Amino acid sequence: MRILTLTIATLCLASLSYGQEADSTSIWKNQMVGSLNLTQASFSNWEQGGENSLAWQVKLDSKFERDAERWNWSSTTKFELGFAKVADVEARKSSDLLDIETVLTRKMNKLLNPFVSATAKTQFVSGFQYGEDTKTKVSKFLDPGYFTQSAGVGYKPNDMLQSRVGFTIKETVTSEFPSPYADDPATLDKLEKTKVEPGISSVTDFKKQFDENVLYVSKLDIFSDFEGFNRIDLLWENRLTLKVSKYINVNVSVDVLYDRDVTSKAQVKEILGVGLSYSLL
Image (cartoon, rainbow, N blue to C red):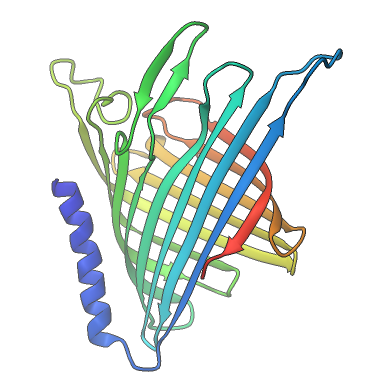
């Protein structure tokens, strides 16, 4: 509860500061894009073999930005949920994400500007690990949940690239699944369901429109707590969108995640999707 309160307080403080300084010339820029990807295969008397399959994924990305003379306030939301079903096996989750970020920046010069930010990240539905004849629940909504509050300085040399570095408090909350996300293995007589890590974070966003039909977006998020650089968390997200027609896109995404508290190996997620895309705002 204290973690949620701290995150909400950061957002309220940012809103209050912005409201006191925003000028009448500021303009809201709002964007919301939804997409649906479907893949289906069906076989009947097909001598070469094959399994019936159905996969779907829903995505909703939004950005709300107000750019004033002295302040910039930008909030983004990412939502993904997908399932895949092969033959008679029950449908299994293929993607699941809820990612919210808000950043308030004080404009002081063309390059370096102070900021405060808050983020929240979790999933919607329960996750499972599957064995040959087993199904083990390993996660659910806000279990784990990740929250951060940051303050530092931002750098934006052009419209394609922007980066920020600052002091960060990162919280991990759990309920049923404290291990390996929040529990400290060194305290054998105690089970921690919440972990608070003060440290330094760096977030870099890159966006390149090669032409009107090809868009590449990349985000590199690095966090290191004060216990040492050997405890670095890294998330590198890459999205390539190819616009086939007004409503049909080809989407390629590659995410690389490294969190030593969870596993010593890098985690990689790749998704290729073809489907409908529609701008809601």
